[in-house]
Length: 73
Image 1 (cartoon, rainbow, N blue to C red):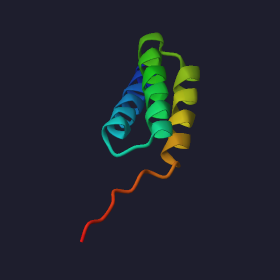
Image 2 (image 1 turned 180 degrees about the horizontal axis):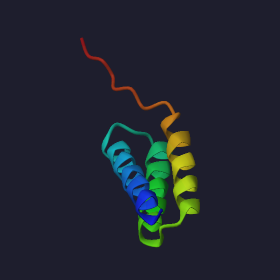
Image 3 (image 1 turned 30 degrees about the vertical axis):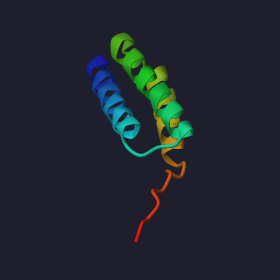
Image 4 (image 1 turned 180 degrees about the vertical axis):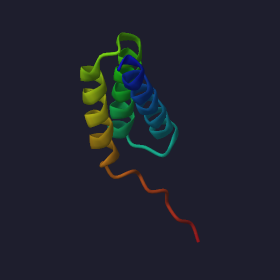
């Protein structure tokens, strides 16, 4: 069971880092950093509670509207 939690936590970290590197606003940046930190913590402790909280934070911040770049004609 520990390996399953660690694989899911690694996926959470990867998704969070991808969100950090993409277009973002401050709320999305902070939420993604929190989710990545909880994912790393879950990898080392193999605990499902930080994994679940990190997933909720990641999904909640992904629902935030991203900044749209200005279109130049």
